[in-house]
Length: 247
Image (cartoon, rainbow, N blue to C red; front, side, top):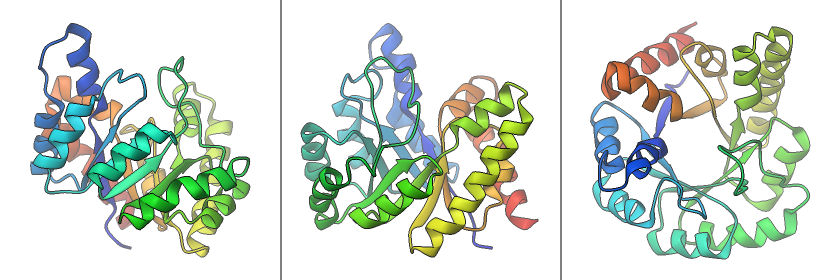
């Protein structure tokens, strides 16, 4: 089985910085530490309300990183212009609501298929790999394929939430759905990624899916780094991911 890539989301380093204002802690420094510790990529979500990552952070990340930047963004004209200016390695289109604390679900691709197809075409033409953040739903995966996305990222939040709540029947059902849809997406020629809410306790079953090529993990790693440090926190996640691939 191929080695699973780890993308580290550094959004919540910026959340801590913005809680007080000023320049510390610096999300770009966190990104470089993650890079030095073996991260295969860095993810940053520039939200419309700039609640954590800001425009200057994206500028600095593009200048500083030697690993790929995965630029998470809503499907808006403003974000498209920013992505086309920077031309990051990858853009991940995510749903976005002002009132949500974090991304609550996958993008509704099937309902907005025509609009999204036109939206992502210039990004692909500019050389960005286009990823769509979606639920493990066949209808959404088929729509993502039709609009020309190269990658889907499966939303693992429902699975992780069910595990945290002790609802193991729902957890296992969500896991099986993701397993089936990973296989289905791969059969269409889509590269499969996964992420949202993954922890040490939940990562291994998802990491074991042979079709999944990359996990994007942020909030848990940033939280765990308060106690362990970022590099040791990443090392433990990497160990669990690698263990899952060896089974």
